[in-house]
Image 1 (cartoon, one colour):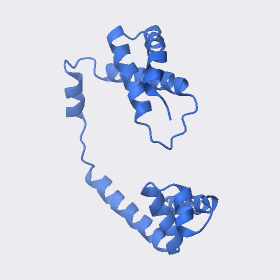
Image 2 (cartoon, one colour):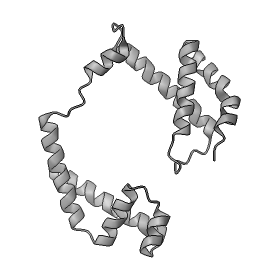
Image 3 (cartoon, one colour):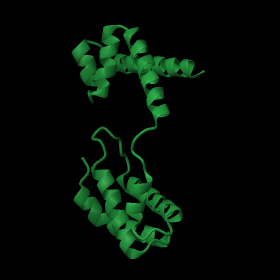
Length: 165
């Protein structure tokens, strides 16, 4: 488990300094640093963050790059967040809706072709169960559960790719 408070005390100044060297203002550097720590804190428990400091610096760099991109695309907007929200349409187009329904039907047909136990592995993993939990529930090894999940994913990808041709 990561001690986020100790990590913040140890690296907060370094991350802000790193962002300042990239040309970010002190205020924005502080905001992006906090966002980087927030992302580390909210990362999934099963995410394997081996080097928290490296993760923070990479996240901060990515956040600063994203911020620069937004600035380039919205230079004239007074309230950039409002302009961005107004420019983005959350609803998919009619064409995208039809394609999504077709893809969903293809996925459903492919899932109907696989055995129930393998289908259980797929849906249990989507529900957040670990491969160890799935294996215990089905009486199989975690490696077998992982292999079955991979086979399902390959089947779904192949089915969708074939349909798109």
